[in-house]
Image 1 (tube, rainbow, N blue to C red):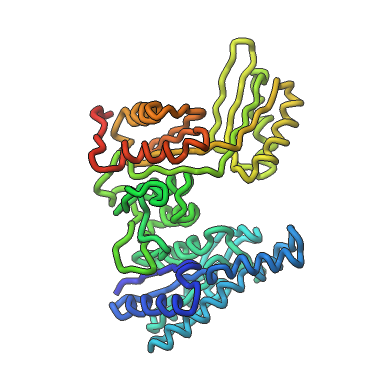
Image 2 (cartoon, rainbow, N blue to C red; image 1 turned 135 degrees about the vertical axis):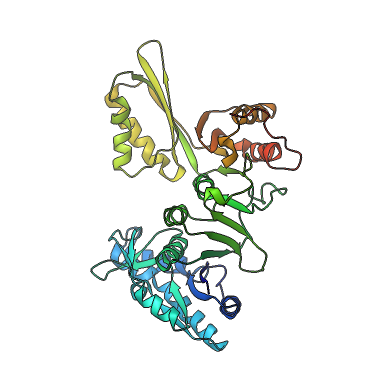
Length: 413
């Protein structure tokens, strides 16, 4: 008898009929002979409504402890309704809030980190033949304060529960039927990928693919939890995210991603001496600004130029901080551009094939697309281009690497 953890997001439990549909799917899994724990999000729109209420009373910065206490109630509504729906279908079910299931976190309100799960109570319920219905997105610190895990927290909750229970698989149900080679809304020819490694999924999630939350994939990799991404509305097999050795068909490029939510900052004419980079990036780090790609060019006159990218939401703040540092360093000027997009190709097979970068650059050059920044890792290549070229670049690269007839590189390392 296998143990399966299932997770359903807000769209999947958006109204009573969809909650009943989830209950039927959960019961079918139980009747197939499996033990089942179900993690659910708040109903679609519920968390946004609660956030609006918090801001109506507390302004743009409501008390974080009370904010978490409020927004966590959305999941409490869902777990109670789903438990009732499962009971209506003739099966025993019991709901658990984050505190009741033993989800222990640190005290970082609104973005708490999971520290451990005291899973003894869940094991007892599952061993009694009941279905455990669990609130995602939330936990409790060691003093009993309710905490929330931040964006995508229900995915992270589900994988953490699967790890604590040593489940055979964590099924993430969503409104799409798997992970695609690219966003089908941009590339109609995109196709579903059968298997991805944890590292591939991490790269794709960090580079713009929004099917899985990055923290959940990190948890899965750390504890070896297989993830099955599949549709809430059909029974078709989705995408498995698993260990690298379990990915039999290692495509050179598994997917093409893009991220429109980045901005570029360029600081020119900085003295090329030790410690300059630390002086520039320390204030950004202290302010919580995440710096992504960094390029440094050394000039012939004893100065250097630095270019880096930040989240678009932090662009104004990062420009202000950079200009302050630039004045102290005597830099020539600071330029910013928030009309960029980062386009990437990702694939395990890039480890064993040379020439992928050259092929990518030729493809984009053929379309008349200039590259502003380039960044690479073992299994991905990212470039920054003007935002107006986003769809053109993505479609050209997908046709080059992921569609039928795309040739493999002829040279291997």
